[in-house]
Structures are given as C-alpha cells and as structure tokens.
Length: 175
Image 1: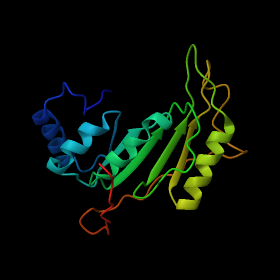
Image 2 (image 1 turned 120 degrees about the vertical axis):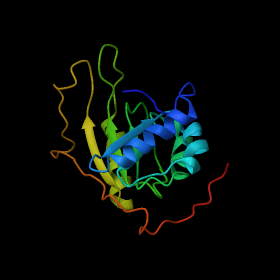
Image 3 (image 1 turned 60 degrees about the horizontal axis):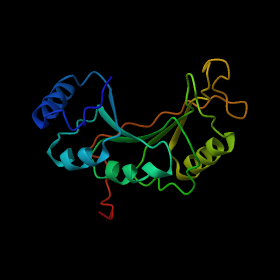
Image 4 (image 1 turned 180 degrees about the vertical axis):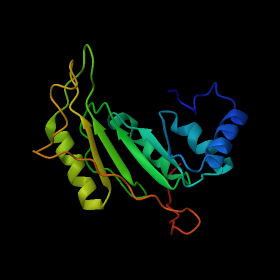
C-alpha cells in the first residue's frame, strides 16, 4: 500500500502502472490518494480503464478541496474515503461521486467520531443516490464497537460504468 500520486513517484512509473491495470482487465483496482493536486495534473495523460476506480481521502473540512480534484479525472468510478472521519462534513457536493466510504480512526490515541457526523453523511448519500459504505467506528479496539449504524450494516457498492458509453458531464470546477 502506497500513494501512487506521491511527488517522488515518477510520471512514467504512474503511466506504466495504469498500463498494467488496463491489461489486467479481469481485476478491479481501487486507487486512493491524498495527493489530489498531482492526480488532477496527471489525469489527462492517464488511460482510465473501467476497472480502475479512483478515490481521495477527505478526513475533515480542511481537505474538502480534494473532491474537486477527483472530479477532474475520467475514472469510471470516483469515490471518497472519509476516514478517519475527524469532523463533520455538512453540505458535501456529491456531483460526479459514485461511492462514499466512512470510518473512524483506530489504534492507540484514536480520536472519537461523532455518530451524528456519520448519519449526516449517510443522509447526504441517500439523498444524492450515492452508494454509502460504513467501514468501522474505530477506537483502540476497532472490532469491539463494530460496523452497525442505526441497527444496520451499510455495505453499498457503486455500479461500474463503461467510460466509453457512460454519459459524463463537464463540471465547471473553480481552479
């Protein structure tokens, strides 16, 4: 596990990885980055096969900008990893987003996650028709509090789209 869009990963290597993923079409690849600016800068040069899903981490309000960078890609599935969720994220613009994953921080010194933050995000996803996956409550023993949210396990997955036939919109995103 690493961040393919880290500044120290050469552009040519990123292109090679995308070529391998394209040739390995029988696998589903999920890429996640915190380096959304580099993702947006390289996106036009990448082939974006339908078996490559792209996501960005958005842990708090401070990193909301990463969502706009993600929308600049032509990934067939775009997702948000809101984990560890460290604060509320009201009014998310889920335009062009297919999947949202939420989870709490785990391990020693884990910061608590307010259940109302999770419920609000779930409500935003339901209203926008975006698949919602609740991964964990977190804590020092992440298995102990479980994965249930309001007496339900949320394991929704997005529908993969063929980028050649999918109707894609051109979103005007401020630079």
